[in-house]
Amino acid sequence: DKFTDELLELVIFVYSAFLIPYVLSMLICGIPLMALEFGIGQYFMKGPTVAFEYICPLFSASCLVRNVSNANASGTSPSVEYFNNQVLNMTSNPNDAGPVKWDLALLLILAWVIVYLCIFKGVKWTGKVVYFTATFPYVVLIILFFRGVTLDGAGEGIKFYLDVDVSKLSSADAWREAGTQIFYSLGAGFGSLIAFSSYNKRSNNLLRDAVTISIINCGTSFFGGFVIFSMLGYMAKQQQVPVDEVVSQGPGLVFQVYPAGLATLPGSNFWSIIFFFMLITLGLDSQFAMVEAIVTGLTDYWPEKLLKRKPYLIAGLCVIMFLLGLTCVTKGGIYIFDLFNTYSAGTGLIITVIFEACIISYIYGMKRYSSNIARITGKSVWIPWKICWALLTPLMILSVFIFSVIYYSPITYDKGKPYPWWGEFVGWLMAGICIASIILPAIYKLIKADGTFMERLNKLLFVPLTEEEILAKEAYGYGVSKALEEKNVYINTSGPTGPSYLSNV
Image (cartoon, rainbow, N blue to C red):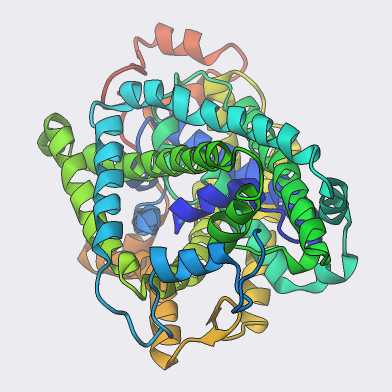
């Protein structure tokens, strides 16, 4: 699910009214959450598993929750028929899973082999790979942009793209999809931001990075909308239909509608090759981050056992994820993918981020967290950051979740094929697992801890100040570094196991 949503990062503005919820979600949720997670990783210099043990041991498991040519005689576009009947060979309804499609399974093996080869040597090696996989899509976007805007009818598509339909702003789906897409495109809630920021220099200006990266990311998505809708306008002109009859979303847009438009252009093979190669690089970038988040969390938790065996750990994770992915490459796999994409990737992600924001703001403490960030970066944390972290961000996420539940409607595939009762059950079970993976370990820790109930609760909820924080309080007014030096306390910020101050657990 994360894989495909990253592939679709270029086309998040599928509906005109999506622009406003998307921008507001970026300002209120996306940028603050990215800064929040950057701060967690950079301050503790650990992945999500251990970092949350330092923040709130009771809820440390919250880090473990974790995607046209002319129609023929049948009235169906050849690209749609090829995707549904040849590539997917999909069954007629979600009740029929069908056998594994071994051509897709072999491609899935190839994908995971490439992922392994790109990350098994560690973050520095992955960074070299990302120089290409992160920049190549920009080259393709620019090429496709200039090709698209020169097509007949491109103007109508761009006009449709920029025309805001205010009536759709009342739809809870638009806000939920906007918020979820922000989490996906920025990587918030998956643990990858915490994992990668744990490798930063501790003095890195993380607030500046959060703003810069968010704007570049969302600006790229906005620019990608011109690439997509210029082509859709051209297709609408060719078919003599309104643009909204050409527009699709999800896998249909990437694998059916847009390729169908490319097929009508001179040199269609060239355009198709660079387009799909761009999608591959986007998918690889996405998987790098997800696997690295898990690997960093596990190696931080069991460094003695796993750090020296990291290549084998990565290989094992790739094998496990390949086996799980086999469920999505059966003939009915697209239905299973849709379940994951709707419930686990949507509802589960929102729940995780709500827990994360509330734990930092109201349990670890906003004042304490802000002081830590200000101390390591040497820059004060402005009040708007604190307001977003403590109030606006969790409130907006919670509102989106509540309205999603209130206006919930049964899931259907491609707006036409309803799922049986077990589909709904499995979907909500996946969302329930996200909550259970946070609550059940907390209950277990409360049971196993010593003392009275209130003593156990207080011990697991609130962690004492670290040596560094105590000295920082004593040093208020004349510099933390000088105070640490005078007291013969040296903070090692470059070691493989993170800062060597006393643990706050």
